[in-house]
Amino acid sequence: MVIKIWRSFTKRIFSLFFKKRKDISVGFYGPPNGGKTTLANRICKDWTGEEIGKVSKIPHETRHIQFKEEVEIKYKEKSLKFKLIDTPGIATKIDYEDFMKMKMKKKEAQKRAKEATQGIVESIKWLDDMDLVVVILDASKNPYSQVNITIVGNLVARKIPVLVVANKIDLKKADIKKIEAAFPEYDVVGISAKKGKNMNDFYESILKLAKKV
Image (tube, rainbow, N blue to C red; front, top):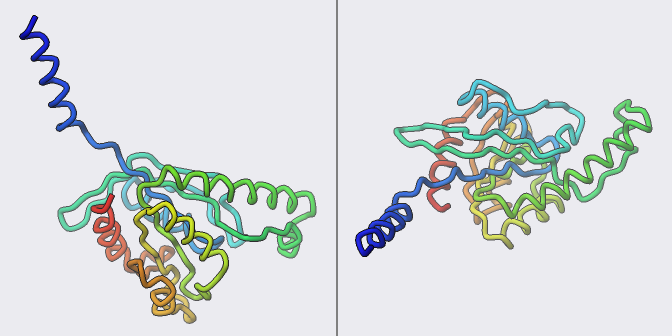
């Protein structure tokens, strides 16, 4: 009887010490058209051979949470396996008339606006499940916006490790220094997800940040 109890006890102890760690959840957040899905597609295609979602020039193409399980990246003999979660773009205001300016019919524009609003609520809720967040910003646009303040405020409140990505550095108006000045508390890496520029810097940065999880 004593031997059985001892075996049961040691089995539980070993399971605690040697239990395989679950894959971490990495969320992609940012304003619409910053390049979240483009970056997610780049990563998934690089490491899984499949893309995760559709990309469009029209804002709020991604209106629902989409994810890819067990994405594993490797760089300089280091690796990280994670669940990649691409979220709808965060916005402080969504007006269906803005979609109509892009040649959408009224009914379609209203539907898109409604779905986009629901997507934002869903994105914020999912923050509670994130182990690490990548904030993707368009490096050619002003980073001092109400949307970015809202995103960062939610992340600070939850104390989630963050990597800021200054995307679209291939554009003439891109200014990484302005992004760095806006978010001095976070590491900033400049990339072009569309052209695959500086992706190794991105992989190195996210592997470094994952150590904090």
